[in-house]
Image (cartoon, rainbow, N blue to C red; front, side):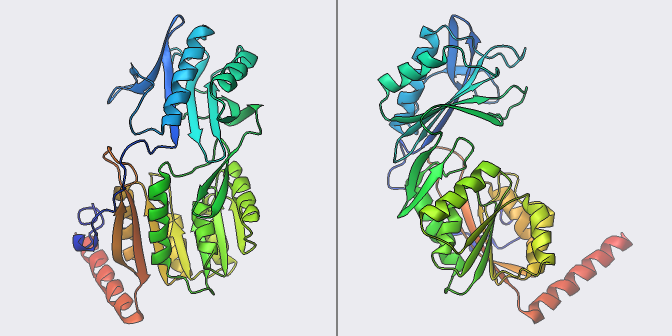
Length: 370
């Protein structure tokens, strides 16, 4: 994809960094619920469909998540819970989600209804059978959509958060918080991103799509000032708490769409030395890329779970004066076809940038003739 989509030299892609142990790594589990009352199904979608294949055990899940899945499935059957039918939009229980933190475990029960039938029984049974569970959240998603979590959370046990660590940094996680699913490989990935950022201590850094501030705090350890941008407000609330908890006062976290906020920061005169991207699978909006290039950072570090959209964005950035230096794949998702990547782009020197602009002008000229 770096060659075909990004039109870059494929030799810039280094061999993937793999894990020591490729099993039982996923700290987050989300299983759809279906079937009919009296014959509830919970497991995984068959390939290319939304047909549920019954099964509460998966060898790439943390064993804690397999425990959560089995216990919640058993409870749902015992309480005769009505499963959600995505074809009719009727029913109650849609998904069961488990998150494994180092402080404890989180269970999220997603329903199509505003209420959770047998709520007290759910809490009693889960906490009795799984003492590691620190919090239980009832999430409401009444829309007919493929999006798993709805906007409303009801905390029915604990405080609605768990704590996890990356190296010596502690992070508070709520139901909507993004956090990498493979703790061991996350350290490898972030170390690589930090190495590419090449911070000396006096830099300003923008971390677009910052989530709960995981990369931001890695950067803040070596940067003068870090600005994190994230559209999900609960994640920003967590990010601010994470910065406070870890003792970083050289950070600022903004709730906003990066495509809207980046142009604002540019107009306000913000000129970062380094910009870090870690977008969703769809990649960056072009307004984000153009604003980033306009700020003229020395380096852009692009972290991606989708190499295809990253390659597309690299190709766009190459038209705005940035040169791809290296791409490091990290096998964050063993036993799957997916790979995480981190790429380094550097600002072209003036002469080389002029050459690129001349080539682009010539290309535009020929297209006009055609």
